[in-house]
Image 1 (cartoon, rainbow, N blue to C red):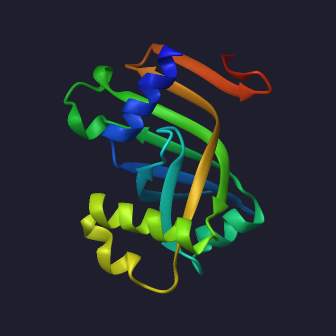
Image 2 (cartoon, rainbow, N blue to C red):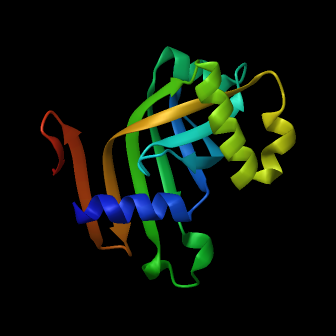
Length: 152
């Protein structure tokens, strides 16, 4: 599916996302550096295991991410924005966590000190839907269901 290739390329190209988790009072947002997962569609986040956002994810794994390239364009009509709704889960397997941390250190060296802390955890967001906008009026929405990805 061509749209999935475009989404994976966009996720790989960018490196910051706005994470939205659900708190008892409503959405809680945080700017996050991320790494694309091996499939190009999942996203890995590093965060303190004791942080408020980590607590919210443990209590309710339904999250949203916004990834855009507005910082690269002077013309707002040329901005590409990707909304991702998915399920977040803390990576608990030490070997898997170690591999993701090593990837983070290689690709996001500015996080090296943070990644070396014993209280830094890794969260993987598995997508359930994407909405991709090119400019203000060209968008596509796809969902993952029993039969795989489809336009909704």
